[in-house]
View 1 (tube, rainbow, N blue to C red):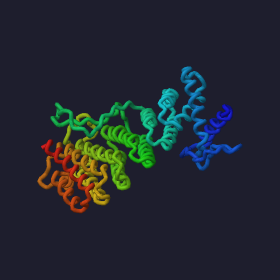
View 2: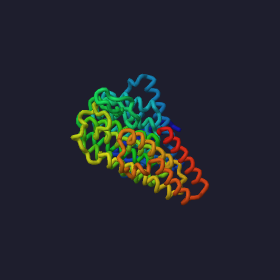
View 3: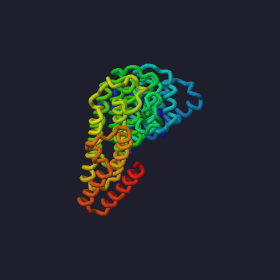
View 4: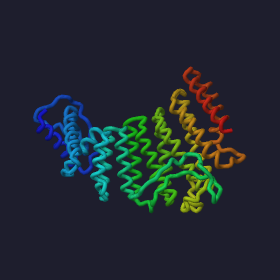
Length: 400
Protein backbone atom coordinates (compact mmCIF):
# COMPACT_ATOMS: atom_id res chain seq x y z
CA UNK A 1 0.00 0.00 0.00
CA UNK A 2 1.17 3.52 -0.84
CA UNK A 3 3.26 4.99 2.00
CA UNK A 4 1.71 8.46 1.65
CA UNK A 5 -1.77 6.96 1.96
CA UNK A 6 -0.78 5.03 5.09
CA UNK A 7 0.74 8.22 6.55
CA UNK A 8 -2.59 9.98 5.98
CA UNK A 9 -4.39 7.14 7.77
CA UNK A 10 -2.00 7.51 10.70
CA UNK A 11 -2.52 11.28 10.75
CA UNK A 12 -6.31 10.92 10.62
CA UNK A 13 -6.22 8.45 13.50
CA UNK A 14 -4.22 10.79 15.72
CA UNK A 15 -6.41 13.76 14.78
CA UNK A 16 -9.44 11.72 15.83
CA UNK A 17 -7.88 11.06 19.26
CA UNK A 18 -6.96 14.73 19.70
CA UNK A 19 -10.37 15.96 18.51
CA UNK A 20 -12.13 15.09 21.75
CA UNK A 21 -11.19 15.97 25.30
CA UNK A 22 -12.35 12.57 26.55
CA UNK A 23 -12.29 9.54 24.29
CA UNK A 24 -14.28 6.69 25.86
CA UNK A 25 -13.30 3.82 23.58
CA UNK A 26 -11.42 2.94 20.41
CA UNK A 27 -13.24 0.07 18.71
CA UNK A 28 -12.92 -1.96 15.53
CA UNK A 29 -15.46 -1.75 12.71
CA UNK A 30 -15.63 -5.23 11.20
CA UNK A 31 -15.24 -4.56 7.51
CA UNK A 32 -12.49 -5.93 5.28
CA UNK A 33 -13.54 -3.89 2.27
CA UNK A 34 -11.86 -0.55 1.55
CA UNK A 35 -14.25 2.08 0.19
CA UNK A 36 -12.75 4.70 -2.13
CA UNK A 37 -12.62 8.34 -0.94
CA UNK A 38 -13.99 7.48 2.49
CA UNK A 39 -12.24 8.08 5.80
CA UNK A 40 -12.00 4.72 7.65
CA UNK A 41 -11.68 6.53 11.01
CA UNK A 42 -15.09 7.34 12.51
CA UNK A 43 -15.74 9.52 15.57
CA UNK A 44 -19.08 9.75 17.34
CA UNK A 45 -19.98 10.83 20.89
CA UNK A 46 -16.48 10.26 22.25
CA UNK A 47 -16.11 6.84 20.59
CA UNK A 48 -13.63 6.14 17.78
CA UNK A 49 -14.25 3.36 15.29
CA UNK A 50 -11.41 2.13 13.07
CA UNK A 51 -12.23 -0.05 10.08
CA UNK A 52 -10.57 -3.43 10.41
CA UNK A 53 -8.71 -3.39 7.09
CA UNK A 54 -6.63 -0.32 7.95
CA UNK A 55 -5.57 -1.21 11.53
CA UNK A 56 -2.66 -3.37 10.35
CA UNK A 57 -1.35 -0.60 8.08
CA UNK A 58 -1.58 2.12 10.76
CA UNK A 59 0.09 -0.09 13.36
CA UNK A 60 2.97 -1.24 11.13
CA UNK A 61 3.65 2.33 9.99
CA UNK A 62 3.76 3.61 13.58
CA UNK A 63 5.84 0.64 14.79
CA UNK A 64 8.50 0.96 12.06
CA UNK A 65 8.79 4.71 12.53
CA UNK A 66 9.04 4.35 16.31
CA UNK A 67 11.73 1.67 16.09
CA UNK A 68 13.73 3.90 13.76
CA UNK A 69 13.57 6.73 16.28
CA UNK A 70 14.49 4.39 19.14
CA UNK A 71 17.53 3.16 17.24
CA UNK A 72 18.65 6.80 16.86
CA UNK A 73 18.32 7.49 20.58
CA UNK A 74 15.02 9.40 20.64
CA UNK A 75 16.67 12.67 19.66
CA UNK A 76 13.86 13.71 17.30
CA UNK A 77 10.77 15.77 17.98
CA UNK A 78 8.98 14.55 21.10
CA UNK A 79 5.62 15.19 19.45
CA UNK A 80 6.33 12.54 16.82
CA UNK A 81 7.54 10.10 19.47
CA UNK A 82 4.40 10.72 21.52
CA UNK A 83 1.97 10.05 18.66
CA UNK A 84 3.91 7.03 17.36
CA UNK A 85 4.24 5.33 20.76
CA UNK A 86 0.61 6.14 21.54
CA UNK A 87 -0.55 4.44 18.35
CA UNK A 88 1.59 1.34 18.96
CA UNK A 89 0.45 1.08 22.59
CA UNK A 90 -3.23 1.22 21.60
CA UNK A 91 -3.03 -1.43 18.88
CA UNK A 92 -0.42 -3.66 20.57
CA UNK A 93 -0.69 -3.06 24.30
CA UNK A 94 1.96 -5.62 25.24
CA UNK A 95 4.69 -3.86 23.25
CA UNK A 96 7.11 -3.14 26.10
CA UNK A 97 9.22 -0.80 23.98
CA UNK A 98 6.30 1.56 23.34
CA UNK A 99 5.52 1.88 27.05
CA UNK A 100 9.21 2.32 27.93
CA UNK A 101 9.44 5.13 25.39
CA UNK A 102 6.45 6.80 27.01
CA UNK A 103 8.10 6.40 30.42
CA UNK A 104 11.11 8.31 29.08
CA UNK A 105 8.84 11.08 27.83
CA UNK A 106 7.08 11.35 31.20
CA UNK A 107 10.02 10.62 33.51
CA UNK A 108 10.54 14.22 34.61
CA UNK A 109 6.93 15.36 34.17
CA UNK A 110 5.20 16.71 37.25
CA UNK A 111 2.17 18.13 35.42
CA UNK A 112 -0.86 16.36 36.87
CA UNK A 113 -3.01 16.80 33.74
CA UNK A 114 -0.34 15.17 31.58
CA UNK A 115 -0.16 12.18 33.91
CA UNK A 116 -3.95 11.88 34.02
CA UNK A 117 -4.05 11.96 30.21
CA UNK A 118 -1.65 9.03 30.24
CA UNK A 119 -4.01 7.13 32.54
CA UNK A 120 -6.80 7.80 30.05
CA UNK A 121 -4.63 6.48 27.21
CA UNK A 122 -3.86 3.32 29.19
CA UNK A 123 -7.57 2.80 29.80
CA UNK A 124 -8.22 3.03 26.05
CA UNK A 125 -5.53 0.39 25.51
CA UNK A 126 -7.06 -1.84 28.19
CA UNK A 127 -10.52 -1.60 26.67
CA UNK A 128 -9.04 -3.14 23.50
CA UNK A 129 -6.69 -5.56 25.29
CA UNK A 130 -8.17 -6.31 28.76
CA UNK A 131 -5.42 -8.76 29.76
CA UNK A 132 -2.46 -6.54 28.91
CA UNK A 133 0.02 -6.84 31.78
CA UNK A 134 2.26 -4.13 30.29
CA UNK A 135 -0.62 -1.64 30.32
CA UNK A 136 -1.30 -2.31 34.00
CA UNK A 137 2.43 -1.98 34.78
CA UNK A 138 2.45 1.42 33.06
CA UNK A 139 -0.64 2.40 35.05
CA UNK A 140 1.05 1.57 38.35
CA UNK A 141 4.11 3.60 37.33
CA UNK A 142 1.94 6.65 36.61
CA UNK A 143 0.02 6.28 39.88
CA UNK A 144 3.26 6.24 41.87
CA UNK A 145 4.20 9.53 40.22
CA UNK A 146 0.80 11.01 41.03
CA UNK A 147 1.13 9.96 44.67
CA UNK A 148 4.69 11.28 44.63
CA UNK A 149 5.87 8.43 46.87
CA UNK A 150 8.10 5.43 46.75
CA UNK A 151 6.13 2.35 47.65
CA UNK A 152 7.26 -0.89 49.18
CA UNK A 153 4.70 -3.67 49.29
CA UNK A 154 4.48 -7.13 50.76
CA UNK A 155 1.22 -9.11 50.87
CA UNK A 156 -0.50 -8.49 54.18
CA UNK A 157 -2.29 -11.84 54.51
CA UNK A 158 0.71 -14.07 55.28
CA UNK A 159 1.46 -15.60 58.67
CA UNK A 160 3.65 -13.65 61.12
CA UNK A 161 7.38 -13.90 60.56
CA UNK A 162 8.34 -13.35 64.18
CA UNK A 163 7.30 -11.81 67.48
CA UNK A 164 7.94 -8.20 68.43
CA UNK A 165 10.65 -7.71 71.06
CA UNK A 166 8.78 -4.78 72.61
CA UNK A 167 5.24 -6.15 72.99
CA UNK A 168 5.89 -9.89 72.43
CA UNK A 169 2.95 -10.03 70.00
CA UNK A 170 3.09 -11.57 66.50
CA UNK A 171 4.21 -9.18 63.76
CA UNK A 172 2.36 -9.03 60.45
CA UNK A 173 4.03 -7.68 57.33
CA UNK A 174 1.96 -4.90 55.77
CA UNK A 175 2.30 -2.43 52.93
CA UNK A 176 4.09 0.79 53.82
CA UNK A 177 4.46 4.17 52.18
CA UNK A 178 7.82 5.74 52.92
CA UNK A 179 6.12 9.11 53.32
CA UNK A 180 2.38 8.77 52.75
CA UNK A 181 1.27 12.10 54.11
CA UNK A 182 -2.43 12.84 54.38
CA UNK A 183 -4.79 11.20 51.93
CA UNK A 184 -6.29 14.00 49.85
CA UNK A 185 -9.44 14.10 47.73
CA UNK A 186 -7.17 13.76 44.69
CA UNK A 187 -5.76 10.49 46.02
CA UNK A 188 -9.23 9.17 46.85
CA UNK A 189 -10.36 9.99 43.33
CA UNK A 190 -7.41 8.07 41.86
CA UNK A 191 -8.21 5.04 44.03
CA UNK A 192 -11.88 5.06 43.01
CA UNK A 193 -10.93 5.50 39.34
CA UNK A 194 -8.58 2.51 39.51
CA UNK A 195 -11.21 0.27 41.09
CA UNK A 196 -13.76 1.35 38.46
CA UNK A 197 -11.27 0.68 35.66
CA UNK A 198 -10.53 -2.79 37.04
CA UNK A 199 -14.25 -3.59 37.09
CA UNK A 200 -14.70 -2.45 33.49
CA UNK A 201 -11.72 -4.46 32.28
CA UNK A 202 -12.67 -7.58 34.29
CA UNK A 203 -16.15 -7.48 32.75
CA UNK A 204 -14.59 -7.24 29.29
CA UNK A 205 -12.65 -10.48 29.75
CA UNK A 206 -13.46 -13.04 32.42
CA UNK A 207 -10.76 -14.71 34.55
CA UNK A 208 -8.63 -11.63 34.06
CA UNK A 209 -5.63 -12.25 36.31
CA UNK A 210 -3.95 -8.99 35.28
CA UNK A 211 -6.96 -6.87 36.27
CA UNK A 212 -7.46 -8.57 39.63
CA UNK A 213 -3.73 -8.40 40.43
CA UNK A 214 -3.81 -4.66 39.75
CA UNK A 215 -6.89 -4.32 41.95
CA UNK A 216 -5.07 -6.17 44.73
CA UNK A 217 -2.12 -3.79 44.33
CA UNK A 218 -4.45 -0.79 44.66
CA UNK A 219 -6.06 -2.13 47.84
CA UNK A 220 -2.80 -3.14 49.51
CA UNK A 221 -0.61 -0.27 48.39
CA UNK A 222 -2.96 2.71 48.12
CA UNK A 223 -5.69 1.86 50.63
CA UNK A 224 -4.32 -0.41 53.35
CA UNK A 225 -0.92 1.24 53.73
CA UNK A 226 -2.46 4.72 53.94
CA UNK A 227 -5.13 3.51 56.36
CA UNK A 228 -2.49 2.16 58.73
CA UNK A 229 -0.40 5.33 58.53
CA UNK A 230 -3.22 7.91 58.51
CA UNK A 231 -6.64 6.46 59.50
CA UNK A 232 -9.44 7.73 57.28
CA UNK A 233 -13.17 7.05 57.23
CA UNK A 234 -13.18 7.43 53.43
CA UNK A 235 -10.64 4.60 53.06
CA UNK A 236 -12.68 2.42 55.42
CA UNK A 237 -15.78 3.04 53.28
CA UNK A 238 -13.84 2.04 50.17
CA UNK A 239 -12.82 -1.28 51.75
CA UNK A 240 -16.34 -2.08 52.92
CA UNK A 241 -18.09 -1.12 49.69
CA UNK A 242 -15.45 -3.10 47.78
CA UNK A 243 -16.37 -6.30 49.62
CA UNK A 244 -20.10 -5.78 49.13
CA UNK A 245 -19.82 -5.19 45.40
CA UNK A 246 -17.40 -8.11 45.07
CA UNK A 247 -19.78 -10.65 46.58
CA UNK A 248 -22.45 -9.47 44.14
CA UNK A 249 -19.95 -9.79 41.29
CA UNK A 250 -19.09 -13.38 42.24
CA UNK A 251 -22.77 -14.34 42.00
CA UNK A 252 -22.63 -13.45 38.30
CA UNK A 253 -19.17 -14.96 37.64
CA UNK A 254 -19.13 -18.34 39.38
CA UNK A 255 -16.21 -19.68 37.31
CA UNK A 256 -13.79 -16.81 37.85
CA UNK A 257 -10.89 -18.01 40.03
CA UNK A 258 -9.17 -14.60 40.01
CA UNK A 259 -12.13 -12.66 41.38
CA UNK A 260 -12.70 -15.17 44.18
CA UNK A 261 -9.03 -15.24 45.11
CA UNK A 262 -9.13 -11.46 45.35
CA UNK A 263 -12.22 -11.70 47.59
CA UNK A 264 -10.33 -13.99 49.97
CA UNK A 265 -7.42 -11.56 49.99
CA UNK A 266 -9.73 -8.61 50.67
CA UNK A 267 -11.23 -10.44 53.65
CA UNK A 268 -7.69 -11.09 54.87
CA UNK A 269 -6.87 -7.38 54.57
CA UNK A 270 -9.97 -6.48 56.62
CA UNK A 271 -8.96 -9.06 59.22
CA UNK A 272 -5.42 -7.66 59.42
CA UNK A 273 -6.82 -4.19 60.14
CA UNK A 274 -9.14 -5.67 62.75
CA UNK A 275 -6.26 -7.53 64.43
CA UNK A 276 -4.24 -4.31 64.58
CA UNK A 277 -7.11 -2.21 65.88
CA UNK A 278 -7.98 -4.70 68.61
CA UNK A 279 -4.34 -5.25 69.65
CA UNK A 280 -4.25 -8.95 68.76
CA UNK A 281 -0.96 -8.45 66.88
CA UNK A 282 1.99 -6.08 67.12
CA UNK A 283 1.02 -2.49 66.36
CA UNK A 284 4.36 -0.85 67.12
CA UNK A 285 5.03 0.13 63.49
CA UNK A 286 1.61 1.73 63.11
CA UNK A 287 1.53 4.19 65.98
CA UNK A 288 -1.22 6.27 64.38
CA UNK A 289 -3.53 3.28 64.12
CA UNK A 290 -4.38 2.66 67.76
CA UNK A 291 -7.45 1.85 69.78
CA UNK A 292 -8.68 5.46 69.60
CA UNK A 293 -9.37 4.83 65.90
CA UNK A 294 -12.16 2.54 66.94
CA UNK A 295 -13.93 1.89 63.66
CA UNK A 296 -17.09 -0.07 64.39
CA UNK A 297 -16.80 -2.13 61.21
CA UNK A 298 -13.39 -3.48 62.30
CA UNK A 299 -14.61 -4.94 65.56
CA UNK A 300 -13.85 -8.64 65.67
CA UNK A 301 -17.49 -9.78 65.52
CA UNK A 302 -18.23 -7.59 62.49
CA UNK A 303 -15.23 -8.99 60.59
CA UNK A 304 -16.36 -12.52 61.41
CA UNK A 305 -19.74 -11.58 59.94
CA UNK A 306 -17.99 -10.72 56.65
CA UNK A 307 -16.36 -14.15 56.52
CA UNK A 308 -19.72 -15.73 57.33
CA UNK A 309 -21.46 -13.82 54.52
CA UNK A 310 -18.77 -14.92 52.04
CA UNK A 311 -18.87 -18.63 52.90
CA UNK A 312 -22.68 -18.63 53.12
CA UNK A 313 -22.87 -17.05 49.66
CA UNK A 314 -20.40 -19.65 48.34
CA UNK A 315 -22.46 -22.51 49.79
CA UNK A 316 -25.64 -21.14 48.23
CA UNK A 317 -23.96 -20.81 44.83
CA UNK A 318 -22.68 -24.39 45.01
CA UNK A 319 -26.23 -25.59 45.68
CA UNK A 320 -27.62 -23.41 42.91
CA UNK A 321 -25.11 -24.47 40.25
CA UNK A 322 -24.98 -28.20 40.84
CA UNK A 323 -21.77 -28.29 42.90
CA UNK A 324 -19.62 -28.61 39.78
CA UNK A 325 -17.80 -25.28 39.57
CA UNK A 326 -14.16 -25.79 40.51
CA UNK A 327 -13.69 -22.09 41.23
CA UNK A 328 -16.41 -22.14 43.92
CA UNK A 329 -14.89 -25.22 45.59
CA UNK A 330 -11.44 -23.64 45.64
CA UNK A 331 -12.97 -20.43 46.99
CA UNK A 332 -14.63 -22.36 49.82
CA UNK A 333 -11.39 -24.18 50.63
CA UNK A 334 -9.31 -20.96 50.61
CA UNK A 335 -11.86 -19.25 52.85
CA UNK A 336 -11.57 -22.08 55.37
CA UNK A 337 -7.77 -22.15 55.56
CA UNK A 338 -7.37 -18.34 55.52
CA UNK A 339 -9.98 -17.89 58.23
CA UNK A 340 -8.32 -20.37 60.57
CA UNK A 341 -4.80 -19.10 59.86
CA UNK A 342 -5.74 -15.47 60.53
CA UNK A 343 -8.67 -15.49 62.94
CA UNK A 344 -7.97 -18.80 64.66
CA UNK A 345 -4.23 -18.14 65.10
CA UNK A 346 -4.53 -14.76 66.81
CA UNK A 347 -7.87 -14.62 68.57
CA UNK A 348 -8.85 -16.80 71.52
CA UNK A 349 -12.07 -18.54 70.62
CA UNK A 350 -14.86 -17.91 73.11
CA UNK A 351 -17.15 -20.63 74.50
CA UNK A 352 -19.95 -19.43 72.21
CA UNK A 353 -18.69 -19.86 68.65
CA UNK A 354 -19.54 -17.45 65.87
CA UNK A 355 -21.55 -18.71 62.87
CA UNK A 356 -18.40 -18.31 60.75
CA UNK A 357 -16.51 -20.66 63.09
CA UNK A 358 -19.22 -23.28 62.64
CA UNK A 359 -19.40 -23.03 58.84
CA UNK A 360 -15.62 -22.92 58.33
CA UNK A 361 -14.71 -25.67 60.79
CA UNK A 362 -14.02 -29.24 59.72
CA UNK A 363 -17.36 -30.34 61.15
CA UNK A 364 -19.13 -27.49 59.36
CA UNK A 365 -17.51 -28.37 56.01
CA UNK A 366 -18.36 -32.04 56.51
CA UNK A 367 -21.99 -31.28 57.38
CA UNK A 368 -22.42 -29.10 54.30
CA UNK A 369 -20.81 -31.68 52.02
CA UNK A 370 -23.04 -34.45 53.39
CA UNK A 371 -26.12 -32.32 52.74
CA UNK A 372 -24.87 -31.48 49.26
CA UNK A 373 -24.14 -35.14 48.45
CA UNK A 374 -27.73 -36.02 49.33
CA UNK A 375 -29.23 -33.09 47.42
CA UNK A 376 -27.11 -33.47 44.25
CA UNK A 377 -26.29 -37.18 43.70
CA UNK A 378 -24.68 -36.75 40.27
CA UNK A 379 -21.25 -38.43 39.71
CA UNK A 380 -19.49 -35.14 38.93
CA UNK A 381 -20.86 -33.47 42.08
CA UNK A 382 -19.89 -36.49 44.20
CA UNK A 383 -16.35 -36.35 42.82
CA UNK A 384 -16.02 -32.62 43.66
CA UNK A 385 -17.42 -33.14 47.16
CA UNK A 386 -15.03 -36.02 47.89
CA UNK A 387 -12.01 -34.09 46.59
CA UNK A 388 -12.93 -31.02 48.68
CA UNK A 389 -13.29 -33.04 51.87
CA UNK A 390 -9.90 -34.69 51.27
CA UNK A 391 -8.25 -31.25 51.01
CA UNK A 392 -10.04 -29.96 54.11
CA UNK A 393 -9.14 -33.10 56.08
CA UNK A 394 -5.46 -32.78 55.14
CA UNK A 395 -5.39 -29.12 56.22
CA UNK A 396 -7.07 -29.64 59.59
CA UNK A 397 -4.98 -32.72 60.35
CA UNK A 398 -1.76 -30.84 59.58
CA UNK A 399 -2.74 -27.79 61.63
CA UNK A 400 -4.01 -29.67 64.68
